[in-house]
Length: 283
Image 1 (cartoon, rainbow, N blue to C red):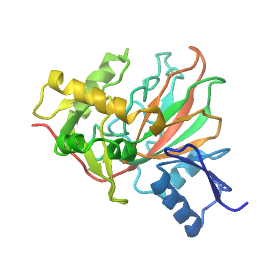
Image 2 (image 1 turned 135 degrees about the horizontal axis):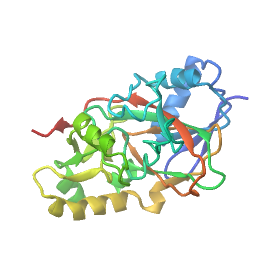
Image 3 (image 1 turned 180 degrees about the horizontal axis):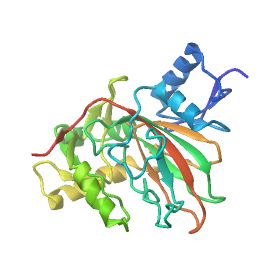
Image 4 (image 1 turned 90 degrees about the vertical axis):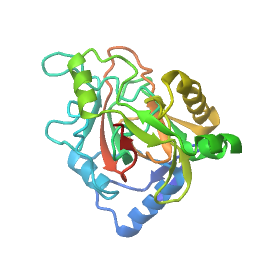
């Protein structure tokens, strides 16, 4: 079957068909996938029965992979390129360190000096109902702002942290994260290095703006996040086993909904492609 593409929503996303990621891709096939990735922001590959090694190998076609030194407790013990997004308990019976991963609107690794170019998440064990992920188009979020708002935010920098929405029961992990990943200032408007388009760069991990108090910042942060996640900008993905979703962190934002029954297993594994340096640590 030749490679083909089906739109996932009006705002963003496409399903790529006719591709078996267990097999090597030709340069022309990969080039078509890469072009579609830049155009659509997220790509879905269904029914990909691949190994961890094949997952990593395909991901490397997009660039250098992160070893997740900024999230040491969440990575696979034998494959540092793989970040575990799982609620399976630890071998000692403690709750998984990553069970609440992604339950805020965010862009991956925004709390580091080299935010992610893209992420490739593979669904391994999926709840029978729920466990969805939502994605939004940050080009559209920026483009639909008023001229006055664009002017206001052009020079702003948001302070990003690695804090999660749900308090982590493991306080040692929280202390470790604050030490490994101190707050970093990122531009609120970023220019995509490959397309040249401007995208809004905000999220629920932004605590405040540089040179502004949290109280002053909160109304604008809340407005921008609410604007960016309007239904017409969003695609909601219902996971199936052996799905792989690839998304462009430079022009999308996403959230894991946690909308599944307590006790159901949800286990996914993610590679993270490194992007270009951005932002600066606060002195």
